[in-house]
Image (cartoon, rainbow, N blue to C red; front, side, top):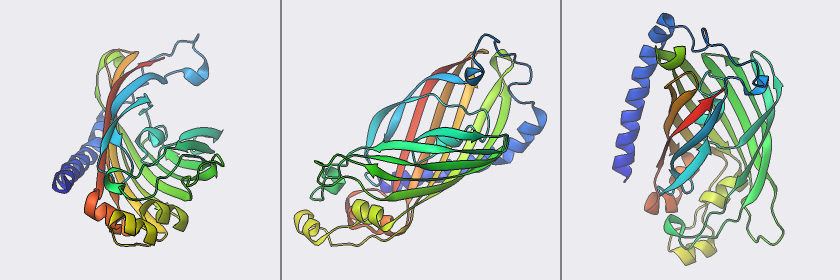
Length: 287
């Protein structure tokens, strides 16, 4: 499985580099998708030219597991680098803008960390219970390129949960966007590529990747202390392909490579995967 994942990473990196080489040429030859498209004046401004639809795909059950589970998500907007911040990020959350300027966006984030059971690669390790997270995010950039940052961590969990997921994560990412060939309804294919780095504090790293003495006895793995620092690096690519002015197909694929203490954890090395992959495909109606 590790060789397959590394081969997929090699192919994806090659594809991304090829796309980045062609994107400036395509962008220079084409105008943006919305140049000759007129939005319906009866549609509320906040909904104009926004997609509404679903994507279906597979994501890893939890980081380092190497196990894929089905997922259903809302369709996302790939029409600019700033808009592509959300669909391609590898630290998922619901992002609500508070400040929304031409070059700067700031807002709040929230998410529910699901439970991580002590089965599969984590057999013999403690069950991690769900918790509610919150944080802030920001993005600065233009339509073709944007830099974003986010910090997110536990704010609440029910008292009856003996071991809720703890700690904080932080991520910085760079997204590049380019319109490609013209297709249905005067719109062009929207293509976005993103790279990001995710860090975590001591509490998060040790709970998710560390192995206590008690867990070592139960699992047969060596005890391990995971320290704060870089947790993973992500690379992803997404696209929206217009069939008509209003209908489009969407797709995305990506991978996450564990780093430092996360990559050195005995349960990851002996039972899991250093590289997690994910992907989805779906449709949307754009107002």
